[in-house]
Length: 391
Image 1 (tube, rainbow, N blue to C red):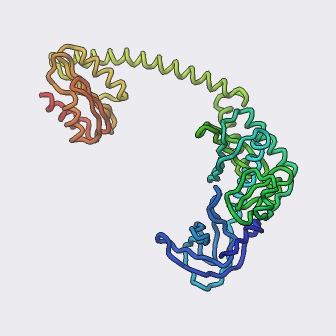
Image 2: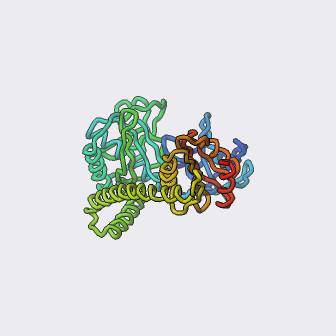
Image 3: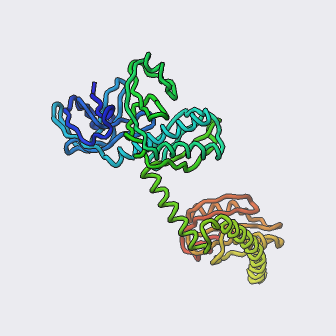
């Protein structure tokens, strides 16, 4: 069985070992060592990366037999002596987030008696799933309490206990593992069975910042960031806030009200624009229909109109007895609308199908009205083909 250096020394950044086995797993090279400081994916915490001699370690997994498989890019041979090096930035980030999770879960348990059901450590943030739904006020209480203990810089110890000893300890959550348990003991605050990597003192977590929360499976999912991730999140928020203050010409605390006003003004502007576009479409439809001098077929390419505008114009033309309209937007790729009025024998959906069959794009509709988009080709060629369909 591989000796797991990180169990007792999570701060070990490098180590020496020997390759005991090389095999191919799912088309990738995986090696097993007699000892390792690489952490495998387990308990919600992702694997470590780094190097073994010149080979890059891109994943570490624990198989069903408890063997540690280091997936590498490169080559190693059985019996070869290797020097391993952990990607320390990645490892320390995981240590901050995982220890922070212990703190936050303990705060919810101690203050609110709310159990953590699961933990997931992602690339940008981490989440815990709580057994019941919690309010914003309760989340703030837990976050404040956990940070207060972090800033006291309490020791985080690694302990071991057999079943009898563990039964006498105030474990936050009963462990399903048998035999000797590895325990993470945050002085006077939390003690939990865990095989992950953690910082040695709470101060190294830096801070815990809850980023968001949502209802999840009858409880709450809490998203949070710790340490370096909290600083990165602050930088993003700072820069976004500064940009918003500059664009809206308001103070940071005035931004929500300013955004609300801007949204209301935009809504009003869209409504006015829609009314004006409808009026303009009516005038455009009249001009197009009258320009045909007796013909009741209008086939035109119109610039500056979106599909909604084209539809309004086509329907206004088709409101005339016996009229049919085929309107395309320019430039390419073109939107297209086909509409027929009462007394017209043309099938709008059939015309559209033939247009898309020849010029690409897609769409659909009914015999009275069909619309689509994505037509490719010269507008004059599209119009000429459309006219042949209406002859």
